[in-house]
Length: 259
Image 1 (tube, rainbow, N blue to C red):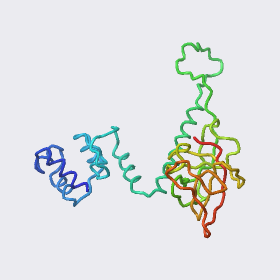
Image 2: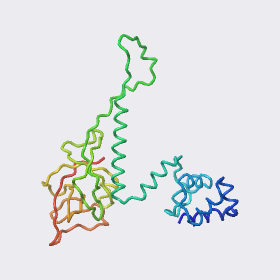
Image 3: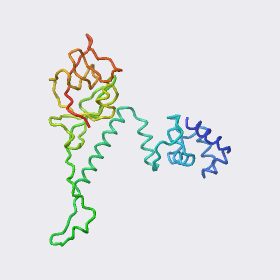
Image 4: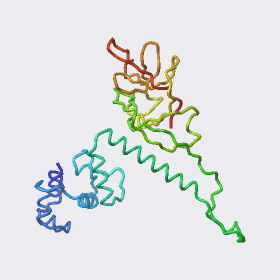
């Protein structure tokens, strides 16, 4: 618990509660409530403790045993609040947030690529004096329907085909014939596909031996290699999936490439 971590940090300084509160420049009653667990510390207080003692916020919150800050970033209190909310949602919620962020990053990058230097008609310009002209071709983007539910490269994830958003991807990275994109979770298709990869696939039920496909088994979505013997993982730590008598296997599509 956070209160236990605060007590641990304070006791290592040799200060009592009042001295520690004065050192942090906060009221004694406020700090006492934090350490006794009577009140949840505010985000800006956690950031203060992290900076003062060079301790990761994850450690203070009891999310890890690693004290050291592996990557130090300057966070606003509002940004920290967003992180706390992100950690409070389930896997589906995190996947949804990840995809929305990916879409927004793509949108902003697209806006940057579309920027042009506008020069009034009739103006004489010495282009050698212009330092910020980017003469590279803007990146062409292609919108692709991207499912909010990821594909499992492990033990399966519940599918919901009706939920997707359009995300812009670099056009040269999107294979011809692509109908949908999805994010992969799990490691059963390593080293061909890794956790977090985006795969592009066409909707088809026509697969040949050795094709990588998207399948649904008992309402669970998978990415596997198609074989007449079953659904094959590329990671040898995983067994082949062989349909049972009561299993229903549906072929959703064929994987065309990844990002």
